[in-house]
Length: 110
Image 1 (cartoon, rainbow, N blue to C red):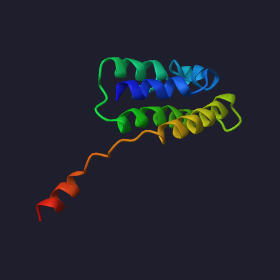
Image 2: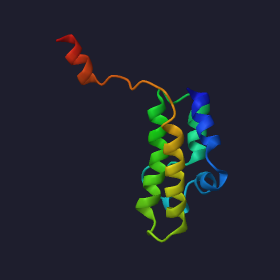
Image 3: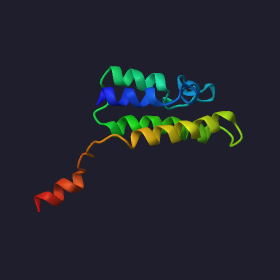
Image 4: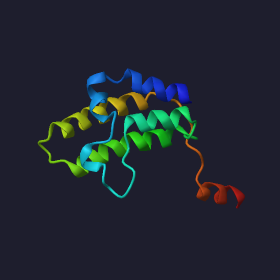
């Protein structure tokens, strides 16, 4: 799984990835820990992702934070849109099973 996640990042054009390698200066003083692609790579190296959806959530978090903290005309917002589009196209090609939710387990028992 870790290899698949790294391959997704490698298939995305470098011009879409570069602006998100490090935390946006506007987010550095936020109370939460802002996400960056470097942080995602660190989490992959440390095997912190238990499922591809956790990885996808972090990539999507970068895009969401960018939209939230920048004005619509900002070039970073355009870059986030391109990153999102490229990522979703690559991620959609992964074949994995979604883990059952606790509600599914309860239904199976009855």
